[in-house]
Amino acid sequence: MAQFEPVGVVRSDRTEMSAGHWANVESRIELDPLYVKGLAGLSEFSHVVVIFHLHKIPPFDPAKQIARNPRGMENLDPVGVFAQRTKFRPNPIGVTAVELLDVDDKGITVRGLDALDGTPVLDIKPYIPAFERKENVRLPAWVDKMMDGYF
Image 1 (cartoon, one colour):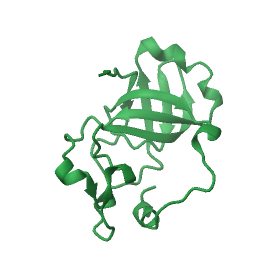
Image 2 (cartoon, rainbow, N blue to C red):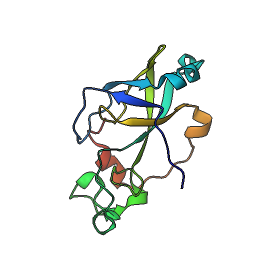
Image 3 (tube, rainbow, N blue to C red):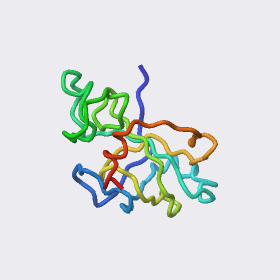
Image 4 (tube, rainbow, N blue to C red):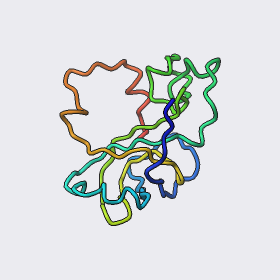
């Protein structure tokens, strides 16, 4: 099985898990010097996709987490782990599209990253709508209820 090494680390004032309000959080991703040259050309993009290791999440417990209420909201029926974006995953990997605020010779600054200070970053990719955005998307009704107040 492949092992992954971080390309950088998140620096943020968020140090504890929260129930949301990530939209305006500014974070810095400090890159390992080995990868800094990989930022060439990135400043031309307005958004990036950050892939990170949810390193503070306890090991996945299928008995408790294979199906659960989204965001722990008791007014929502349980759904399977693969039907939601819960942090409790068999492989604790986070993926978030964020606004790119700055690129410099040590890393990037972003807005909207739902990762804690010290989170290992596995990869950074430019956000390209043709790859990310899809037309005619269908979502279950509970998603709107779950997202109320998240951003």
